[in-house]
Image (tube, rainbow, N blue to C red; front, side, top):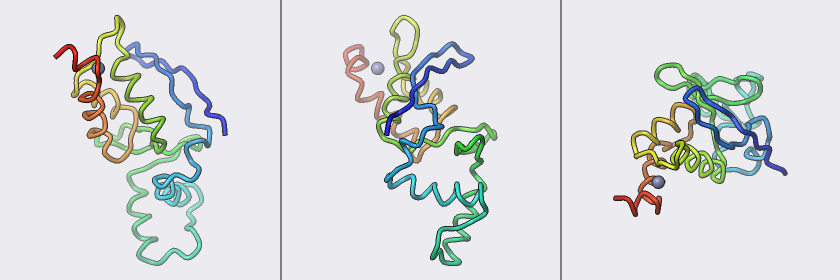
Length: 146
Ligand SMILES: [Zn+2]
């Protein structure tokens, strides 16, 4: 399945390439997506997968409160009710991290906090802050500078 990519510009001038979300590339055979698929299905169709127990159904309903679906794309609501697109594909996570970490004009790299903020303002996945921190730590360009 082809990954549809696009360039998206944000208010602060960042331009980066990401999967535009309307494709289904990330949503196939992904462990994480399985989990969010049931939330997605509940939000969109108010339905559960076959064989869901009462407890599982309640868990899905509770979880669904933190998510919304817009235009067939699943978003997570952060504390300020800002919608962050749910990302489940590891390759896409890496792409997002690298373009937001080193996306500054002139080749500057954002530090840990800056990178975490830029990523988590727009995207959501479990441990997103941790992944961003580890990404910056492992960045060879940043290691050379410090
Ligand atoms: Zn770096």
